Length: 338
Image 1 (cartoon, rainbow, N blue to C red):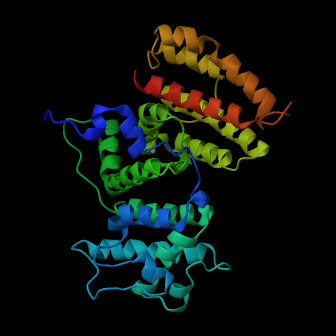
Image 2 (image 1 turned 60 degrees about the vertical axis):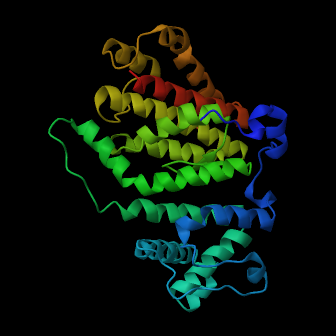
Image 3 (image 1 turned 135 degrees about the horizontal axis):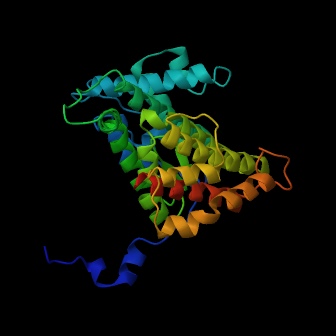
């Protein structure tokens, strides 16, 4: 189609219609913005025949129709109820979903879910969405697919993992798209919510790497990165130091599994890289020779100075932690492209 929209004729028009609102957190949104985000995501949670008017909500009135569920509504119903049940079970003293606690029926689960989404603080909302993601992933854990005659075990495991994450991937794609438009500083991956960085870094490095690491083979590496991101989000000097430790350990773990088939804590980074090149498991190209040549010394120095693996000369900073996280991702991606 050759027709161009009005905004396509002039970049300034696009900026006017869709201004850059910067990077912000959930708590900086007003309730109207939260409600608009809800409406863009609502179809994943409820059928559209569940009507949530923000005005009615403020007045304490929410209308449920008699048949709120679609043909796959049974799954949606289970996801919402299980999410709310998990939230109450994990945080018993707080009892965030009070209505469902007192009278555990679907209507109350829906009300509590929506109420938390609109009125909860950042940590509570992201925990609610995280638990919802758990239900999406676990829903298909019970299912499997047959292995083809012409595929090896790694290929089969990747295809099986993609199959089991199919619903989650659709949800995360939509949620990330909406969050970007509202300038929110989180990215949902198969592992967890992580801090958003430059879009090019996220789309070309973080997302493909984390998708590859979701396969069972890399579970231990995956867990180290999950811990790294978790510590990074604490936004404290100790958290940044812990992040650096886990990020460097994830690189070591990745190399040990790649070269030795398991994490065995054998070999320094430098020796592991040399062995990987010798075995042709790591690319022996200009990038490797120029960038990875001093890789071991850079990470060793950072570990010595700011991580918790040794007595620290100083605590890590956000800049240090983000740099090491990016190095870890780039290194793993480069090795996987071999």
